[in-house]
Image 1 (tube, rainbow, N blue to C red):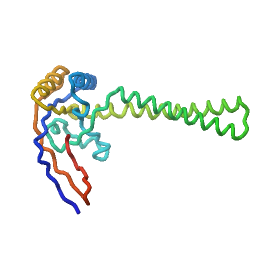
Image 2 (image 1 turned 90 degrees about the horizontal axis):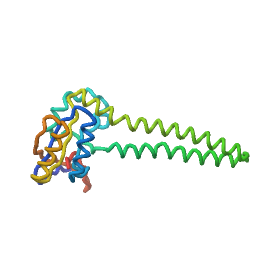
Image 3 (image 1 turned 90 degrees about the vertical axis):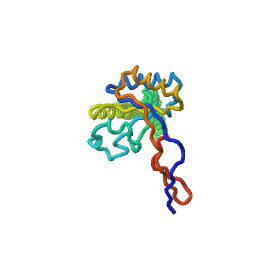
Image 4 (image 1 turned 45 degrees about the vertical axis):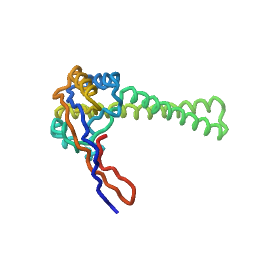
Length: 205
């Protein structure tokens, strides 16, 4: 059984700005967090490869999405978090393949020197594979940010809870060179329930 549920909660109030360079975006998010905004309050435009089949041309003008309640969002991922993930991507394959190499060499009765050599060789392969994955992980978000820049800029939405939050958000956006800075109220969209389980189609916050 399928049923559409319309939320009765009040509209979502947000501060919005468009960024024309990536460093200013990073600086703005960092400053927002120092002013008490939670990372969950800060959202960006969803990646087209995940949401619209990978065609950047579908983003004609990001300015048109600023006040669109159906614009799909993603949480901001800090560069530091990506750095941590890069370390894991490099270290884990290195560790695993080194252990595999040592185990296989030992199982075949290799000498200590040969065991070390095999383990080192496989560890190096693992490190190379991990480095490739880490490079891809680092470049993917920035590549999408650059794609947005060619289509008008990078929209940033900040959920504000009260007048004080609203004022702080506007000040931080303006200080960090965001354009078209303003406040809007967006309705939450409906969601679907099926067989007693809720499937959220789109809910901003």
